[in-house]
Image (cartoon, rainbow, N blue to C red; front, side, top):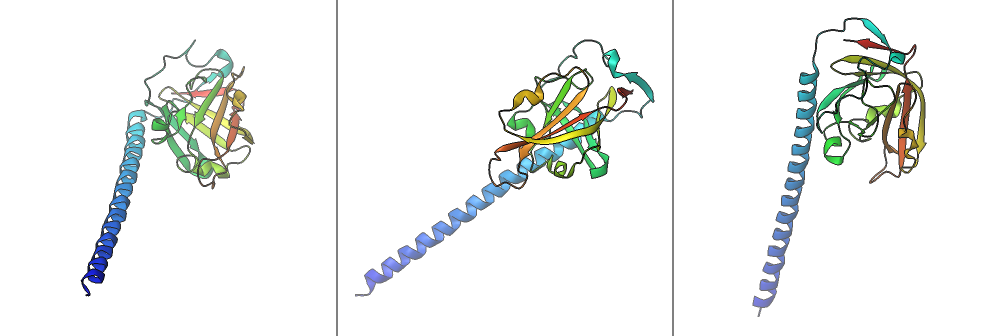
Length: 214
């Protein structure tokens, strides 16, 4: 008479064990995916710094009004190529910038927005990054902070003129500018759970219109 309750109890126990195993397996799978992503990010940043390492600056100065150290448009590198390092000394912030701004690139580091000026050209250089990863430190940036963009050819010193919160549709922030400009873009609010609805924009320009040439 007790066989049916016992069978039901056994089925419930088996179902519970299967559910526990499934949850555990899902957790392990998600942790594995996260670990792989972090490993790719670390390796990309490490490899980028190694590739970009060059001798110390020569100290020669080139005026931005002359058009930049190279004349005309620079040859665009392949997607994912390390372009340079972006630094904010006050925040102890330093990260390698890659060419391209799609999701696959931005998981590895901030990316140069393809339709904007190339580092070293006159105009508006746009760089995007994730608010919860590489650009998280920028939540504490302030006006007049120095932002340094260093490539294999030159170092560009910008100073923050403004920060703003805009709609994702306000793409005019990436429009060309007559002089050297740096535009950093990330999602906002920084602590938002899920897909953040706004964009945080940092605009900077050089002081004295000079670049330091390597």
